[in-house]
Amino acid sequence: MGSVGKVGVVGAGTMGAGIAQTFATAGYDVTMVDLATPQLERGLAAIASSLAKLEEKRKLPGAPSEILARIRTSTDVSAVADAGLVVEAVFEDPKVKADLFGRLDGVTAKDVILVTNTSSISIDSLAARTARPGLVAGMHFMNPVPIMQLVEVVRGPRTSDRTLATVIELAKKLGKTPVVSVDRPGFIANRVLMPMINEAFFALEEKVGTAEDIDLVMTLGMNHPIGPLRLADLIGLDVVLAILEVLERDLGDRKYTPAPMIRRYVEAGNLGRKTGRGVYVYR
Image 1 (tube, rainbow, N blue to C red):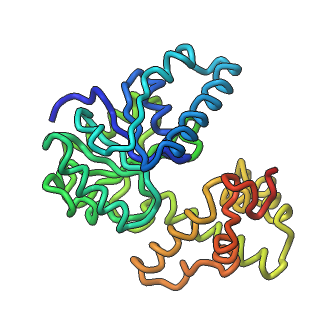
Image 2 (cartoon, rainbow, N blue to C red):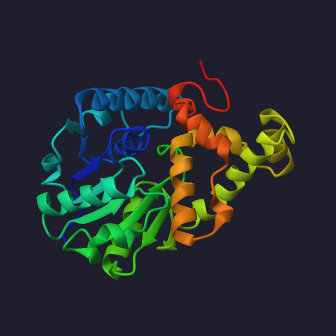
């Protein structure tokens, strides 16, 4: 297992772009891959906007242009062949992620660590698609990635001690605080968070309070920095739905059944901040 030099990030959405930005800011050369050029262009634009805001607040170690110069893009997954570590950050779909891990196993060197940014899917199920299960782990960043301090490091049943130590140390080099979770559905973060978000939607549908009031109770009464409904919009209601479905299926407990209102928002295409409308309107 060589040292991590170049980093591959597969996925240029909100999380993938944020992860690429975070590695580039820490001095790593990054290859960001997505299916099509427009997604990559949107990802780079999001990174440029984020860097500009951080520069205004004097929270960057270098010029935005220098950080952006460390990020190259490609629509071909084989572009990460020279990476020392690859981060998977595609949509929260078990089949999509598993298929991608099989492809990554074929294009990268056999001693390269493959990590997933999944927020709920079994690490071992992804490791099973590779010939290197000991080199597979979870590296679950929080949104917005460049700002949030936590990285949930997930150890699969076959993740080696050395892989775990490498990923923990890497998180620290990014200026993050790593917390280790075992490989159980939802890990720590979403095992605790998603039932609260889900219950907030049930309360909203039952008209226990308005969206604003539900969020205000949690921010002022429980000292949360953001209410559960606004947080759901930030995460993306499609992602919230996908995580709840994984929790319900893999834990076999109906308490994780998604609130019908979440499903209706997703079916209508109102996914939260990224579409300009979810529980709240952002245009």
